[in-house]
Length: 295
Length: 295
Image (cartoon, rainbow over all chains, first blue to last red; front, side, top):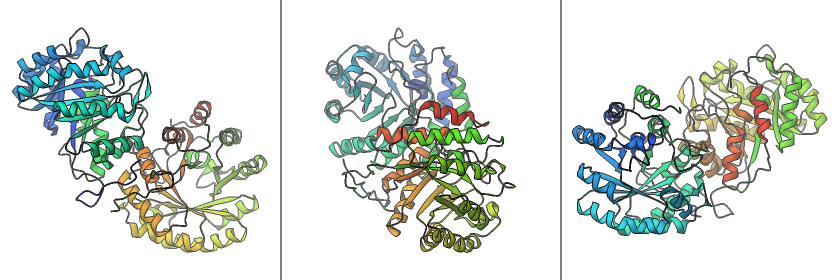
């Protein structure tokens, strides 16, 4: 219930520039049932890096028995290192982290559901068990100087428990902050959030943790992703995940459709005069969509 | 450049309740190339009135040589009077108004493009010529005690001239206020507005004309209609036009796709806890869509 919007230095409530992080190679493809070849993934990553994304979430070191689509993580990472780009890889546990470190990744990501019910279904652990497991993981990553992105899933709603409270979210965020996360990514995992609660929760978190960079991660299940990006912008969020072509969805989140499409967010930001430095060609959008059997 | 959002009496920037005006029978169907039967139009209106819309824009007294789809205006109005509902009919000129008054309509609507280029293409008159023609029209309608809705088209962008300035909009709004409009409807006619400019222009107009009820009328051409409704809500707009099934588009506005779908706006408002009093059944949405050859 915070009714005013702070003025930023350009006299409007909106940031001057926004960092867009494309997550199509990882979040976009992880739920794709047909395996996409390493060559096609490389082409997607190359096209995205040429489009100007400063960071791309390229793969996950999840065990292949859970997500076979990501079994080629080492090959993808090797290619990313060769390209010299900055990229993020998901490392859901210590074993995954060791693989990522051995492959010399610059940035890792971990995720925990603010909803205990979701976290249980997703990784068969309570939220607190997952938080405890994060301790050695963060310590190891930080010791190696690796940037840590910390995802909070189900920040507003959970497909199993319904509404998620601010306290549940804050419980995870606080721990991530204490552990030394470099950025915290706020996920509307099943795409049920409405813009006003996005605005309010983002603003509350920004006020509680003014030094922490937050990222908005929205799914378009309810057609509200762009409204939610706008609401998050009003709350001062200036980093957003999106997936080229709208690829994606969460395999463990029933009813979750694709991530908000990068090209849609870029079009809105461009209309608003917000700089991103991205020039995403229509052919790259078509190429991304051609990788999915579900679009 | 107005960076703060006023607090309303419920402690949030959002209105407690919103009036939704369904425009599918008029704005939704006017551009439909295949004639829809009077019976089907009656069924749509009946379904909408049962859904709880307090006002429906049901037809237009435009000359049939321009919009043949609306040639049955008298039959539709007779049915609306029989039903005892409150409804709006478009009356683009004095002749149309006389037909509407003869048919005993409770509310009329006129429209003028804030963009001179648009108004020229649309009705072959300058904006000022159209405003001059409004004078006797308003006088006649007010004398008969008829409620006058005044549409401003191209409030943010014009398909012919591009951006539309606040002064161009204010020029029309001021005249409508002086003529005694009962509400002023702000149209993003070609669906090119972004939420921040919607917020700013709505807030400026609300500040300049605090007694005037404004209506938001958005098209989803750029996928931003819901974000724009949210932005308008933040600026205190509490009346919105929408079209069940997303029927519509403007025949004189190249590239304009459908009006924002009523069911999408209702879903967002419902999530936000904003009362509308509408219970729109999925079968009514399907029925509306079945009337269009373009969906």
